Image (tube, rainbow, N blue to C red; front, side, top):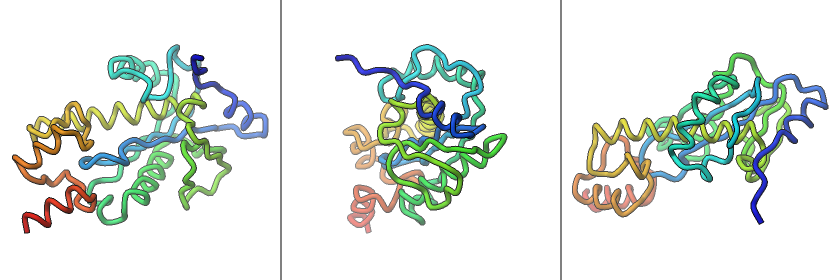
Length: 207
């Protein structure tokens, strides 16, 4: 049975309770060995483009085609946490920091936040909902997931041009065979997360 696309049910319910600005919040990049974690907050102010869905269910070409359409119908805030912050704080806290920055980058503070997943950041003070699989259920979160992934993937392509041999242009910093081979051949870069076990082990072996 085909799954239904994300809809406005959560947004509409929040607005019925009096929320004026309802924002979807999602992040990309918890798992990779290299690069920042990127978050996006989205307030839909116009009709969502056709075909919008969880970014993981869309091809790269489809995500890129949606980006300019989303820029026209959304108020958007982006936030990042650097590799240095990930190593200093841990990936969970760095992700929460990126999400906080995304909310702060919006034109106006939200009345209600729809957060993908089940992990509430400690800084969240406004009304909110945690939605497991929210990027496949809420249109606002789906939009945030597409924009966050597009932004991070583009950033990793740019880093790949500076550091060829790791396959970041295609693996976005995840631990693929190409990435492993690049580490063995070229070593650890400043863009690698040194607290992540595979990178930490490699640094220990080189010490």
